[in-house]
Length: 293
Image 1 (cartoon, rainbow, N blue to C red):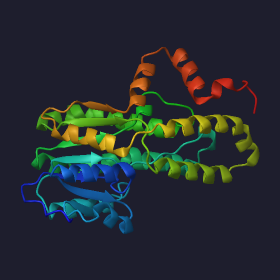
Image 2: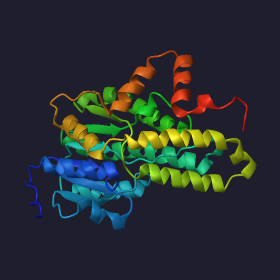
Image 3: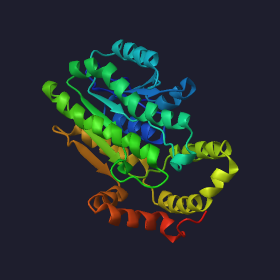
């Protein structure tokens, strides 16, 4: 049954990356709680999917890496409301693989979407956040604190976003705008399939002898990641954490989401050599003979 249109007093939330697995779950969870969700998505043909039959989910064309697209999104939201209760920077990509095999264009894309994009969106929508006495939520990743092999690009980009969030929390406190970091672990979404496809394309463009150097390591990491993905949580778990962060009168600066995040939190407290040894064991790299290709 179609949802009823939200009332003028409905709290409004801008959500980027609304067509991904986590974005869809978040939009549905927020709508169910009575929020109006401006569902930002880069691909116009997927915007209708983000809304479905829910009148409380308003599709907005939004490419977080394109200043013109962001400005158009601000204008579209301003036509509907004069203030936002929250901006949720959820859009992101994963670029994976050993750094030596990551094309420069892919590394640039990683930071454009995961760091420059949230910064651009935040700058553009801050006036609406101030007007709505709202809050800012940035979705990072557990690997920002404990990077693993083959996940250097995503870890570095999310660490940058986490650092930016820490600075913003102090900068925006003057206006009473809380800045919240959602730090998820592994979730069962299609983003990993997209990352693997991109990695395969990157390997195909590299000299075969260079790819061969990493073949055994790649197989070990692939096995470890396949096992981790079988234990991945549903996107609704992160969506519930987002609702909690928005409903809290005084939200925590950071919400960790997922059992694997707690384990990584323990690893982060260990001496670096100990952590490296354990990470090598978890990823299967410890079983490989040093120096062997």
